[in-house]
Length: 169
Image 1 (spheres, rainbow, N blue to C red):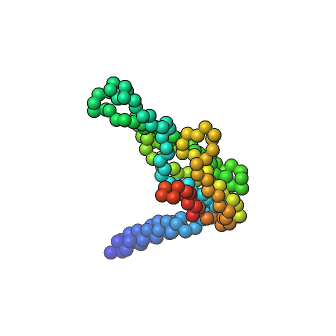
Image 2 (image 1 turned 90 degrees about the horizontal axis):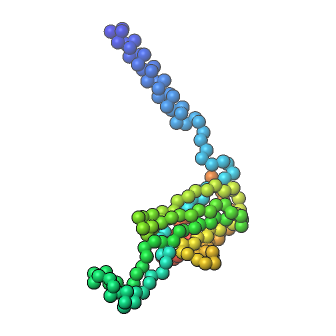
Image 3 (image 1 turned 30 degrees about the vertical axis):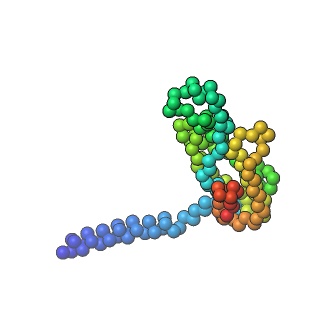
């Protein structure tokens, strides 16, 4: 009987040390995701850009050359335009990203996800997006917001397809 008590005591001490180390590691080392004077901006949404080329209305001669089962009056290429996004903080570039539509024919909705850090404090954040081929290089959607960014705050930028505008939360 004394031998089993000693084994039980050694086993108890080993378990106590193991759980003590786990408890210490779960609470003691302080981990800070961001620096104390930073906030984080996350860009996360799904968006379908416009087609790279306009649909072409086929002439009667073109339609007659095609087999009967392929005689659609319009020829619409499937490839979609690149999505170009710029983030500006106080009118200075914070980031620029280009997203390519996925799919074999590059015709699907792009899943936009990117994250950036910015200094805490009062700042003007501007988000601009181009989702079509434009000769002038302008932007189709622009949203500007002036806010106080709290240290450690997470800001989410989404896109509301029904209202065609950015949502900044």
